[in-house]
Length: 616
Figure (spheres, rainbow, N blue to C red):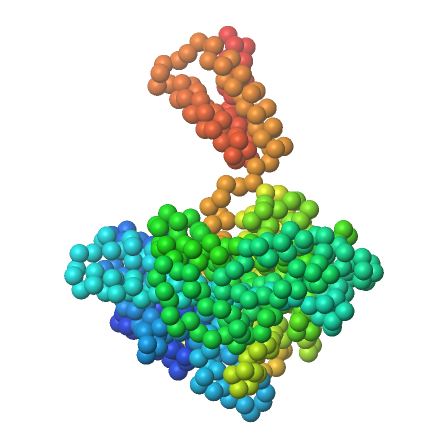
């Protein structure tokens, strides 16, 4: 199934507007307002394409396109849509602000109790989580950009007042999210002889070397990274001094929430009081690390920098987050590609060292960090080819591109999903769990990102075919039925796994938002120039050289009238030759397709002239 970003995004917008708006006002469901993650995901389904795709812009009403207006007619008219979006955003900000006007980031119903028959307490459901911090960064930046552009399009006093109020609350939320994300970063140091140390050595050594050799290689390969952590990490973190000992192993990345004992961020021009206490253990999760990386990269996107969306304190926080963004990518990329032979990441499924879990989902999350790193440092063809093969294997093992067998355990990747305990949540009165159900959507997102990165024709072709297969799988999982909740949105895993038990339609803003992100990424991929083939470029130049020579020869012949058929044909040939020369460097295949008919026409003219000469 071909990915058509414009058409498919419009389908999602139409379904989202039908599900979430009535006469321009948001429709609130039972769980709305309980989870800042789900509420942010729902708004981003609308706002992310509107701020990232020029054809979908809503912040300049005079330029809004007709098919966009038809898709969003439940939200309002051309002039009403921006105002109603601002109203929905303001409602989100109010809902997730406490009595002291401090932003809150509750996981809400996304948290799961640690045992059967146990219910979440109100305190637990209000706990902040990295998913919310990261989503809030993306949502706040999209909101600030939207307001900055829309403000120039309206002169209504009440609307400009609403814009000012929303900008203030959004900036406060953005700063709070950045601070909490900073304080959720952690470095876990442990001895090589500990259980966690032995597991890490087993994962990266793969049994091909002695423990001592693996430890020496780890120390040598990660020495620069260790030095950067020691010298540069100061804000919002309190790490073990034993990291200075090179015989110690370590992991770095994001815990599930603010780390227990994490110091407050105090070196800001404007003090930010009320920073929440932390409960999370110093245990990095690859899942929450990927979530954090996705949000942090928006802080230094071209749009953020061009519009000047960050204030002085936010710029300072962004630099601190960027350092952690780079460190995490370097660390997990090194671990995933450790050694000289087979990568640890190629040994599916990935085993987590701290939680003692293994799953294809964790392989996908480590691969996602590797994709971030490959984009950051411009991947080699070998790295890219091996990563493509991993993605293809994950799609097969996850039964995304292959048939499900009877009682297939792979179905659990999609429903009910992979569950992780949140280490340290016991401090809140009981163990909490976090469940991930977006395996297919994450696989699609990383495949498209790799395709966008690839400049190798064979690798990109494999990635595009994989992305189309995964997208067809996901598109088939949309909820259907007139009376169903979330018609046209996600997720109904039963549609592709009919033999699976206890699987049914379930409205998921998490999966819907990720598919929306995928379609925006696919649009960015198609906006790129196609990969240039050196072989075709050489062929195009040879064809154009011959065509130019024959065209010059044809012009030596006696001319007909300026408006004659031969003169018109020569002008057409000259125009196409000029166009082909302009394309030969960037689109050589198109240049070849233009040159071949020109050569054929020149040959036809030469044959006609020869036949005429023989008759004379």
